[in-house]
Image (cartoon, helix red, strand yellow):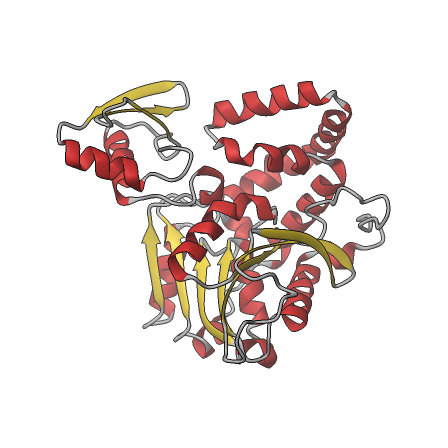
Length: 355
């Protein structure tokens, strides 16, 4: 894994790669396959590490992610500061993020590359807009849009909640994030540990979240979010039709941003479109990026037990790998596997950190 802040569209931006670094030359003059991830909002690269690791491990291709402009701050920000939001709204709004990704691709993706684009949430909307540019479209081999927020975001349940309840208190959230940054690090860590314990978030995101709680970042994240609600309205069917052979859509069965009815409408309006509904969470990278079939079975077991929080799990196993304790929030379930061969298979398929 390699990571650095690069100048993209006038903003120092965090870029993270598995496989060759973006500034390295390809090992061969032959066309190269490159997987590029455009994140959701917040566009923080650290949340996608395990997902990227899994993609690189399974494909062998370089996997790159470019964060959103202003959503991460480098340690030496005092030397080359990231511009503030005030007076630079065009850099950090929705169109600014589209221009930002366009600049990154033009600078770092070889002209003869076979580009595989993966968009998550608002990253899907950004990709559809990138496909309007011929120099980008000609390099794209296929596109995977995960939980795509590509139409009428303000009308979704999460969009209504954000507008009604969150928007009036954004000032308070920004203020609290400022208070958090001036706390002693031991207190910052304690508060973050408690929060992550409550929401069942993997420990690997600890440092990423601590760095994310910053008033400058929060302002830009909310600015982008409210522009999304205002501007993401009618679905761009023209772009989808033109690239239908390349695009696959993945919706979530209980997604508050891209509900299943949007998938149904997409398939009804555009016959032949490749779209499906999965059982993964919209914010899957914050929960678990690699979900083996056996772990999915455990979750299904918990869902049958009518635990609404069963999609966020922590697992503890006994030495024989036959008893798995599955924790969801404050509740603990025990799953006993009598078949030792299946139990060992489950152990091997668990992601790093759960084995």
